[in-house]
Image 1: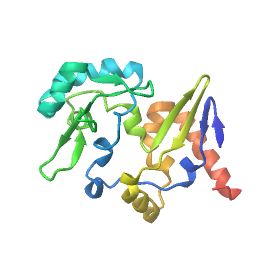
Image 2: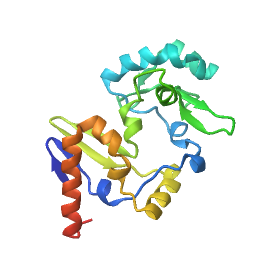
Image 3: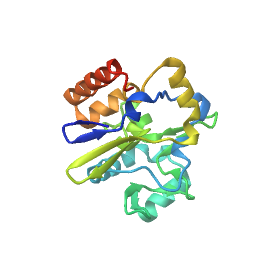
Length: 193
């Protein structure tokens, strides 16, 4: 583990390799699991703001869930998460003609229709952020649905923290990310990673 400011980073975030390959996994991370994606309290308003713009991209089942319980709920562990359809699909999923799942929010963002990318926990995956009072902990989350991303990351030699450069900067800032990169280089020289 290393610490930068109030953030503790698992060495797995620096040593493990990862690179998404949506053509192989078809966005399975948005449709598998037993709860929605973690959401920060300040993101709820943003999710509600983009809803009218992405409404027609959502399935009728997702629209019904949102009408009934809203864009988020508190899961069994007490965490605020995106609402889900039939116990698995995130309500913000949409599909292309090949059956690949995409985030409707990210799609709208890339098309210039909204100014919110998607929940930061989704953007940061496979890193999960734990909140421990005055400290945050970044841990690498292993999930079978991402086996292809691990293989692709190994082949391309892309460490998790480099694959997630953009969302890490979004969450913690450029100076923090630069310090993380410096720490990783030092750990490589010392053969810790």
